[in-house]
Image (cartoon, rainbow, N blue to C red; front, side):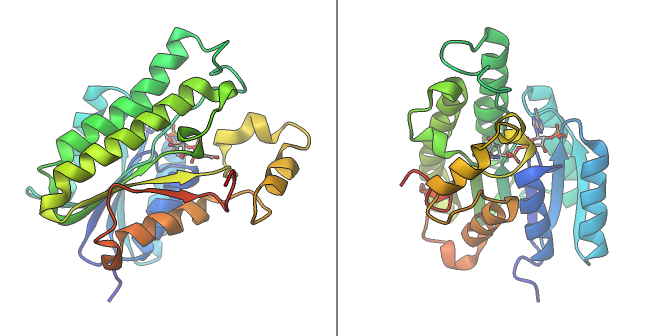
Length: 254
Ligand SMILES: NC(=O)c1ccc[n+]([C@@H]2O[C@H](COP(=O)([O-])OP(=O)(O)OC[C@H]3O[C@@H](n4cnc5c(N)ncnc54)[C@H](OP(=O)(O)O)[C@@H]3O)[C@@H](O)[C@H]2O)c1
């Protein structure tokens, strides 16, 4: 029997990139996966079709998690699909936004981008977690997707990095709240991963090579590298690991 057989999972921002790899990995392990997306309907539906074609169970939910109405409608759709409460085993708060180029830097970030990053990267995980507390079954898992930027000085991405630092704090508070029920909450912090998130940077000549050189494992990350770290935390063996920041970075900035 697949190791997550009979379990349910919600992955936010799962239409593309890291979230899509996480949803695919959880689906392949037998979980029934809710694939949340904001705008990429075709990508989300293609992913759901792939998971089902591979023998898994999945469905797509359009919702902007940066607003409360989006969060509540997403969870209502999960309740419909998963059945009565509690109904959730794995929550992955993955959806995230950064700025194009250095638009999120200390010098340039404007109020609109700042508020958007706070809404999607910080407010959404807080309220999704809050509203999932009673939906999560005992022994469940919460995994927040942070960033190496949450621990290092990152002036060109100062506003983004601050939201990821905040997510580290939320992870620890959540771990304390859910611990008595055998639910763990951890944060996976990716380094540089080859996704559209880094489109502007990766178009800069030499950026990928220079970043690979700085990485002890000598390459950029791929979404599956991060999905593997999330899967590790979702396994039974990880039941005693909570409140931790797990860097999945190939050793970048050690
Ligand atoms: N790539 C990296 O190097 C890197 C490094 C460190 C941390 N991270 C973190 O890893 C996570 C995933 O990043 P990625 O590289 O996979 O990014 P990506 O390729 O840009 O994908 C972002 C995903 O988030 C979704 N999303 C964005 N805003 C949303 C919203 N308001 N509501 C619902 N979904 C929303 C997008 O959905 P639509 O396409 O439907 O809009 C998409 O599925 C983020 O939290 C990011 O901060 C990434």
